[in-house]
Image (cartoon, protein in one colour):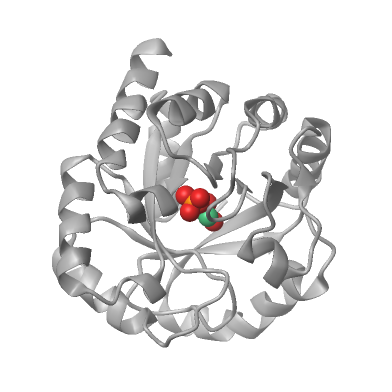
Length: 254
Ligand code: 1GP
């Protein structure tokens, strides 16, 4: 097998050392104030955030390149694109989550957008992380569920997520992302994370509705390797201190 590239290797390194990671999600539509962005990135650095995820299910302004330049100028953290569509590809990033929405049955998001984006991704030389993406119904219809026109997995059905991940692993996907969607009412059910953890040793990313130390602690304890926070940090960057503490404490509790 080909040697792992830096971002995927970093995630595996964290996992193999029983550590956890925290990713801050930045939505380019909401990063138009460069002073605010710089302050957010400074907090991220002081909280030992591991990755910056950049993207959105729906980008209504053309701010991706500008946002990436501003992030590059103000932060050393690895930038991972979290694309909502084939347009969200840029050589300024370090890597891209090559998402396939395996919880849904929309061919366009299972493989269509990926085919459209592949030549550009290759031309940019971006590292790709083959990621099985699962949307979970966390209490409110989200932009991700609406735009993807897919039915999310019910949060009280861990077994559906588990067999979906099982199939994804058999297909060769190498990471899994359980997502309640941005601004979810509640976090992904820890029982679902646990069920997925039991059937795969591959890295698990979890996001959507994570707002507190306790939310993060529950998700890490259930087996999440990387937690993603967006909305709560947009509202108040202090949440990064709490989530970072949960990350450190999870190591002590391991
Ligand atoms: C959304 O997982 C991310 O795709 C983050 O969700 O904005 O609710 O933190 P929040």
